[in-house]
Length: 503
Ligand code: ZN
Image: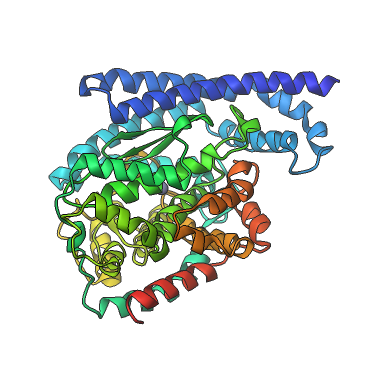
């Protein structure tokens, strides 16, 4: 058969692109974990070379020709067959990649690396002016990038689509407006009460014991150490080199018990998603996660819905208490449970609790849209940040380090599409969990016994194994039978925090 030969040729070419990208990921992992500082200049160059070669190989006209030739074959197959999905996902990636001129990409990469370097100096120095010219250029380049995809409704649409394929500014805005109207009264009601006491988490917890407990928990949740490992880093992340090697990183604070543990569970959630891919997708464009939002739904499902639930701690708290008998002596489960779910108006997004977290995301999304529209300038951004933060949180950030300089996203990437995935993830985490409970009402009682195989198995079957086969909107429809809704998430927050704070 003619198409079989062509398909085999396409697969060979794409496997090489995949190998180059995964080799670059190994270098990136090493850079963030064990590489000595002296390796930085050469490593930056090596990563740039690999990504350039991978990009050149991918946008090669040969691939476009093969995709054209294989279109009749794709159209003859059922939509969700592996071959049709392989071709559909590749076609989407290819069309997107070929619209961006290589010279633009090269310029952009050099600019992003330089801006990131400046940011690492500017943030500790509280010196926004130092990165401002670069950030202005980033905005300019972000607009240019969007313009390679004409026909959009809002200039942010192509950039949002990169991270969360199938979403656009108007759909995210509508969802966030609905969510905001529900969240603000909950935040206000909680803020009117005295804050939870989390001093039990802020004692001395030796690193080795924290690491041991943190590794045990993720193993029992379903993270496979035969196909993964945990190493230390500054800003924890998950990275994968194949379905057989999906790694997580963590960081420890000896004076705060929550750091390593919840970071581990969060990153293990991302990792279990990719470890759970169908092995048949190994080395293909179908491996991985389908969108920023769906990926984040998995980290947050395990971290928050499971890892910060009372049932989970009914099992683990006695074990933790035995491990840290001095520190947790006389601390009842309910006090610990309240401590790990403390709601407060934090300045920092990554430290924020489940309830206020989304307000941080909404602020950033709104600024991205305004910057791209041209209704807000980079020069006015720090001031705008302070004003908006005060009106949303009732707190004025004391400086720019903990304001506009706090997140790496705009300083190492584009402005647009960088943040909405976090809140989409929160919304989907509750949505998917609700579906898992419909199928298996025994999940909460199993959790109290430290058993997670039913939940993990449901997620593998309904989400993980598909990898990138379905877009996020398709996946939501397939799993829930309906479009994305905030209802289960709001219900989840109201139930949990209603009990915690007697609302
Ligand atoms: Zn995450």
